[in-house]
Length: 471
Image (cartoon, rainbow, N blue to C red):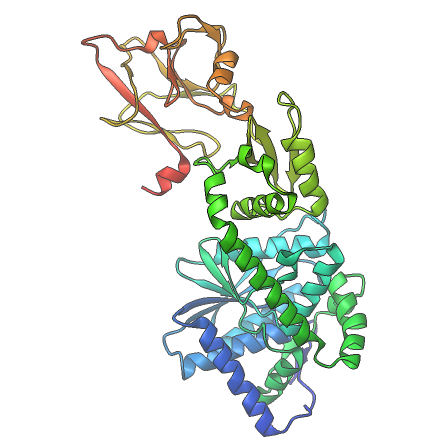
């Protein structure tokens, strides 16, 4: 096959060591694996790099769509990292391959931050973020990791000193936000994929960066795994079994700890620390890891987990202690742990006009909305007069007299008495009439906002962004 100058050089497989019957058998087994894993899923997006692995996956799906899965809605996407001078040509090759198979195709460019754990980690993070955003409603993402990739993943987890969760490596099916991620080739070796490519005379791209041993995976793939397989030919499959056993152990722990974690996790998502003070360190660590995982937080190392307990949980009650984990901060207030964004934009100077009480007022930084409700648990305040300007702010000066308290207090003292965490105090909306504080919706009402008999009333509800989405 001829290719224009600058185009990627496709690879065709060399003669395999198996006969045609073996090749047919491998192809049939691969088809069965894919059909079984897909089950009733019929909208799929393939992460397509143009390499051998994803080319086999795409070709398999395209053939299955012709015979066994005629209702399969198939798309492919190439993530353009911009790391290689041939990336544009690779995108063209991927588009050509998809056109041959009548598969909808798109290219998505991403930008990387190498400071985020190095080039490999940054590329992976950017790639999966882009893939999540590209998925449509009800669509499932398919990636082409195979048996040898699984082996590399477990060895890298060993290098990091990971526990059973890390050693579980990759799952054939896992959640990806509101979607699913499937890895249909996870039980298939690289050699079997090469045999398939020979059987169907496929062409693919060879990324020259895969030959650079500076990258950890390449170091294992090029220098370590060949020696291990030479000594133990079935090494990759044995490692995959170990990964599966670790995954089963983690699943059992999840089941055993599920009820405890449910009782420890409070309605606002914080973790109740009081019952954990008498627990053994292993049980405590397992619960904290699962609490973090449920919130999508990057798993801490053993050292970070130890620091979280000793430097944050066991710090002085008046200490402002925190632990940073990737893009989150873990903080303690009273006897609870909270997971917060790494940076919380200051809102103290923000003033929001609310000229039309019939419309909801959107709050900044995904804090939800304020709205008037006709009835319900929202307490009543007096309605503003025609001469009073209605605004929402995030701070107050001077002494405040709130309903139910005999004496006035500075707002800082009121927050403390009401158990409002420090980072929530300047992120709680405050309703003002002119320059007078009237209420913190759902938290307190000032004496100046208290409704008298016969006065028109407002019921102001603060609806979180999550609650608003669920309505």
